[in-house]
Image 1 (tube, helix red, strand yellow):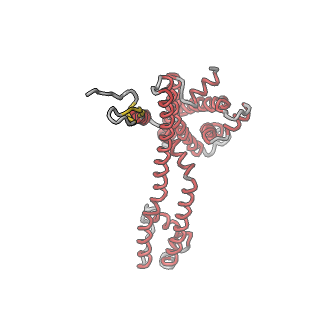
Image 2 (image 1 turned 90 degrees about the horizontal axis):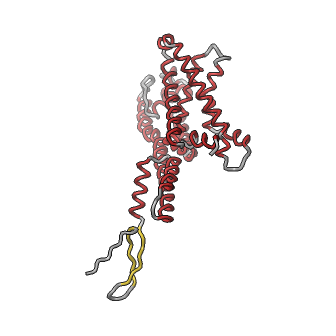
Length: 326
């Protein structure tokens, strides 16, 4: 295995034994530490007192994240499944979402040399580094997959919610516009109250005072419970469906392994573990799936009745059929 292949296994496949585990754990700790540093640095007193320490850590974090970005661009051809040239594979990787996040994680450091007025904004941009954790958190990968697959449904739900917000704002403007012109004097002003009420937040900074306005407000507040739960329901059902799809895919791989060899060897366990990691399943889920398939994997034996000589089948687990003579 050459150096580039080895680096690809460690950084992208999260493999590579103890060395790969140590490197990925170190990168996770650097991401978390960097986010914590940005949060602490937002406090003026802490920032002034530990200014030098923050600067040293930022230089170190920038060096690590820059090296990480360069290495990932360098090893991009290893993931090439379309026989592209190395240059095309790297250019294709650069425009992927995770590569853009990696670039944004180090970009504020370069911009600080050119922009010296709004350093607070540049420091805040470093919080983009938190999104780098999605590379290591498989649950986040599943969440992103759900957002991708359910994008059309989400757009439809928010489109309906937007229409209802506009209709609600229009109704409150007609009922409360003359009484409270500062809050409901126009549809645009009424949008704030309509949005906060329909999402069941209800700050209480703006409230209807007329009887008709209160009646409409009550109806909107009750209907808002259903509307606010709609995107959450889509997300929950989509997440559950995605996890089930991944479990079914892993079950198929386990079935193939057991049917071919009846016993899972050490190398096959490693292969299944790589598939498990790619699908984002936990070791506990994978172990339960393997045990369930082993228990349910039954073989059929053809036999003959000693009395009537008619043929019959015996379904039994592999290697677990016993005949007792009476």
